[in-house]
Length: 371
Image 1: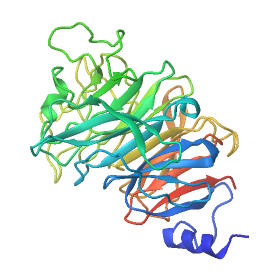
Image 2: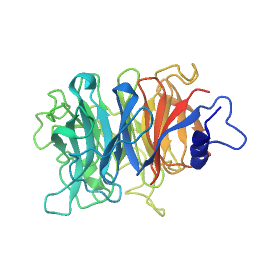
Image 3: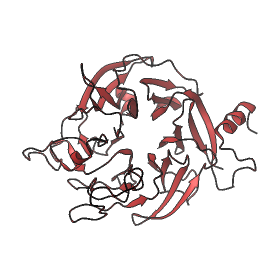
């Protein structure tokens, strides 16, 4: 039987239906609350979590759900609009090196511009501060904007890091140019240098960190079971996309899109296809405002869910369970739809269970328990 406190928390979220949850649905368990607009979660040894809050705080959350004090040593962030302290990722060798990575909207020194930056640091042995902080990558150019920072981090199997970068809204045309980081997916080594096998290394006038381009605002990225990177990105009004970004490829924004301008009207020439530009694996019309992304590789929820892709919806407040066959979407299932809570992050934990963050002033860290 659920404890009164847990039942109260679930009711407050609105995700415990009055008539009960269908047999096939997981049971949401609130592990922690009182997080202010949490954005990213990473898994630490001992069942603990490292969680970012957009306003510029980072906390360790205990296995018992207790919130630690904000860590000291976090750099200044340009918090406002869509900017702030965003994704976080523990290094694959965290138990040995205590290293983690995080991305944030980095303010320009003495100016009003900002851009997405990627930093590495070590968590102090007592879990109270960031040690040996170093910004290893900064988006160029910085732009005076409060929008479209992207900012999801994925460690590839070869140890390199992928980082999604938004088009900053006002600079969407730059997503088609290779002399800047706007509207790009970049790949860097753990020291921030461009790997020698990146697709544009050595090409004059092209930034070597670029992996793929023509992206709008990617807020979800994950490795598939085969090790390939998948990502999704926000469209404008309609046209949210799932892509499997290949090196050197152009994903079309803003030349091609299945969306339209806010309030209506075509973007550019209103094209959805053009030679030399990649089609999305899947797109949503209307937009669901996707955020967070994870493949389920465990069998904790039964065989039918293993291999499914999970994406959070900010706009509609549900978790999208996506069935795939041969890299094609064959079915979508809306989970936790009664909650109407903005789902910001979706991750599979070391225990094979799914974990969610809700983007609210009283944000929650939620674990989905098998029925």
